[in-house]
Length: 257
Image (cartoon, rainbow, N blue to C red; front, side, top):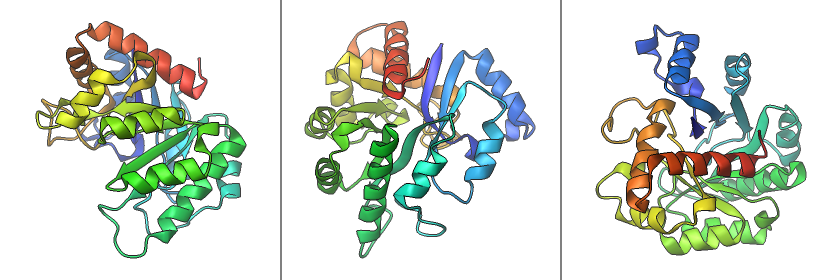
């Protein structure tokens, strides 16, 4: 049984499932997807996302606003705390910094990140952190805001081993996406080999970043199997071991059964 620790179920291309979410869920179940964490990226779409997954007890939720979202409501920590009262919400985010897609004065990204960290600490729910071309500032803000008190995960990991070590020192896990299957992702491969077995997760980030051999096509939570296989190959262990370990790590981090 597999867990997709990071996916955007309300963004999936359901054309091949007759645009029927229930048919997708049936297919996921048939391919041994046990649980999924559906990630929030903006509050405008959040109510519809909550309604979409409501019938399915094996789907958990996060609440947050992605660092690249520059339109719509920017929530305060108190607003995030209120939304996190939903028992299906097990994490705060995704949040963080992204200097690749956003330009100019990004102080608003920093403040948004700080608000999410505050909400995480007050709710005692782990953070889901996105970072792109913002290594130093991401680590600095996590340290300054004492994010180690709640921890979380660096999702879709693309940084180096030094970053991974500093993140793990602050109580964060490392999550591998379809990028780990890319031939030229040498830095990520190195981290996948080195990360302690009790500190990694696997994810799809679907519908984005489909793994090999589906690269360039729509991504689905079922493709977490390819991520697990590549991590297993890199670590020289069985795929069953990776699946079991990643599941245990997910349940420990997010405090779910």
